[in-house]
Length: 91
Picture 1 (tube, rainbow, N blue to C red):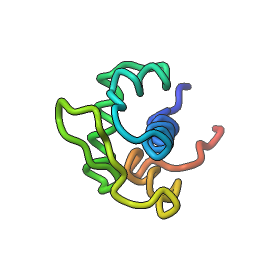
Picture 2: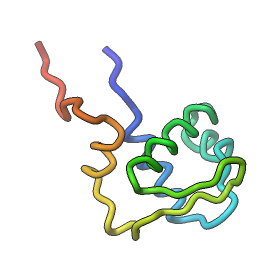
Picture 3: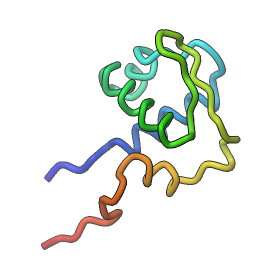
Picture 4: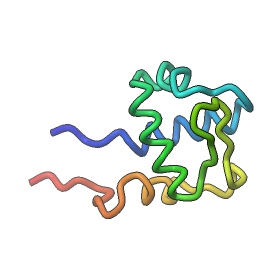
């Protein structure tokens, strides 16, 4: 069974944004996460809707809306996975 990598990819994106200011395009983020730019844009949209990220369409300059120390893994998990259980039961 495959498990979602959305939360791990979102953490990766947020860490890169926190470490590198300016010019982080979806293509550059996709290369770092070994995924597609479309996938990155979708994740960034969810992070924007969740209130963690600000970015403008067509501009490679995403910004965290909270200090990185104020963002918990649980915050990111809830934004990315909604009601999906954290632990997968082995049936």
